[in-house]
Length: 448
Image (cartoon, rainbow, N blue to C red; front, side, top):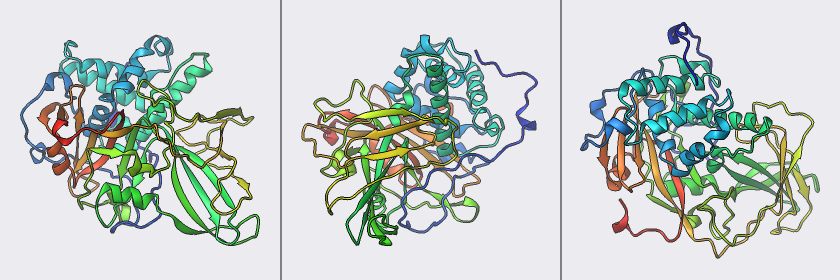
């Protein structure tokens, strides 16, 4: 069990600059040019959040132990994902024997404290929240302090910590499946020489996708903006041409798609873009991939059946040190315009991929999969309330297992509904969680 040393005081720990969020689309958004993570320092009044009928605050709510609304909101959206929580609990016998599974142990305890028969109160939950903060200090000591941090940056660091704990278990010979894999997917970037049509491609792993705001201010148009083709400077190894067209697309799809809306930027990253961005309760596969539907990144109880197999080969490397930014090895294949390449080779040292591995996959060109029958359903929204990045308050809206929407404002939990979430969070939504569902999309009348 993780215990916080009594001599460790958050007030005398030095903060250090955290990992910045990954870049989004290269096409410029509405106004802010230089996006970076917000740094809220003091919460605004809770009265500014929406007041709704009370729900099961005693079990679902999480106490604010000192500007930890960013942590509470993130935990609510992660732990409400059914397969994410179940994967942690299912493998408890595997990771509980390791002294390095600090965050796994802390998340398991927080999840159990939210169960109806847990008997947990706000005081006991406060102890659990300190254990989460202490576990995250392995990524950055600032999480032991009492300053509020960016929810997107926290999510990335939390997923990284869970990946590292999983890799430690594998090094110890434990057959372990990391729950972070449910959020992972691959994007393929294809460059086509405008002179000779020669193509080259790279693939990278992600666990969230950052979106610029489109002029239309809808999420679907922002997705289209992200995957819009563009002209780039590129030296062709074949004809030595200096320009190419570049397009990105999904190579694999996640079970849980996390979308990061770029609301912060300007000088010092302090400005906030409060323009509304309309997001739907459901996403069709065609909204993400058009007619070229790839397979899911991993298999699960909800995985599609009868899909074309995806071939992956792990090749151990002699150098296993992790680098701070992704490095990509590209295979270039001479092919006529419009034809796909035979292979793509990607070597990444990002937080989302085990260091020292190369993923090699068959053709990067996706084939239409007519048997795919599914969609993404909105299950969580993390919102930042307040006009500036250095002030504000985080809340979350989550869709529970009963199909009911809950508004989680630290220890206070209120009943909500889909229409309220879509309307009231258009100007404040910062992170959106969509979970893959099999079958047909539900009619609006049947949604919570």
